[in-house]
Length: 397
Image (cartoon, rainbow, N blue to C red; front, side):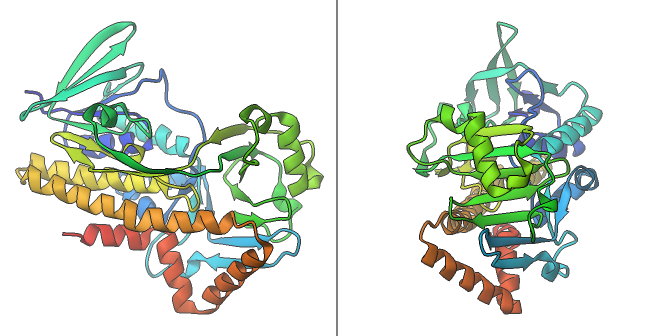
């Protein structure tokens, strides 16, 4: 029986898991249904614990060079300029990376894939759409189509990093309960220099305005602006250039008409799998849990899953008890998803989308009070940088 680990999905989570395992001398094969690496920006926030983990693979310095550190972030009222500004510098004694790194996730995909090819040439297989998975007490099998032909691949373990609509999770019949938020989210990217025209703009901004909330994140080559269209909006209207340009002109009239680099509309979910492992089948990232993007926790939680699981598989290959370690994996990472990532991202989501001006101002005053108290300020940052979440997860026995 093959000792190979099969990874389904070549997103950031699957590639990080594959690279860490390959560096430990474990054979890996990554099955990716697309014909090439994903090039969409998607997630763009890296938090401190994730940067520290990626540094062990030699990837963090490259990512910092491809991104833009944001040492401060804020909630701000557009019309009045009132703000609550949070300073990651207060965490300089807790982490080597006291900032949010704004860097599109395709940069991690690119550098991780290059490192994997160097470590394990040919392990990344494109155009391989997994259609079925199976397992015995001794191994796993993935069935996939490639070039119009049905193929199979055997291994010892299978990691499902195939996203929210995970074929593997569905095949296994693992429950994925939760909710879908009523509002959709829309994000565009523009190279326009908003920072030259909007006073007080930081690298990470959550705005309240008379025409609705929006967010602005500064990556290396663009500003990413996100908002939720009205509930009655049709997707084709939300994506229309006229409507996008009108919205951006309200945010910053000086930039109209705006050059656009990206545009993406997506539904927001809060869900978690009943278990993160079933026998030799293992779930990571969006295949295991989904959350609001508010705070930038999704990819970070997934990458942290990948490291946690890879460490346990390495120990299993070295002779540790698989049953005990994989049960611990589910306990640790499911707790991180439910107790920390869901609760904090949900609070961020609801705070930013508060429609009542009086309640917004109350929320702003509450945050300003937190910032005025150093201990509360640090505690808030420890939660929103996922440092507390990662440490609590790792401490679960």
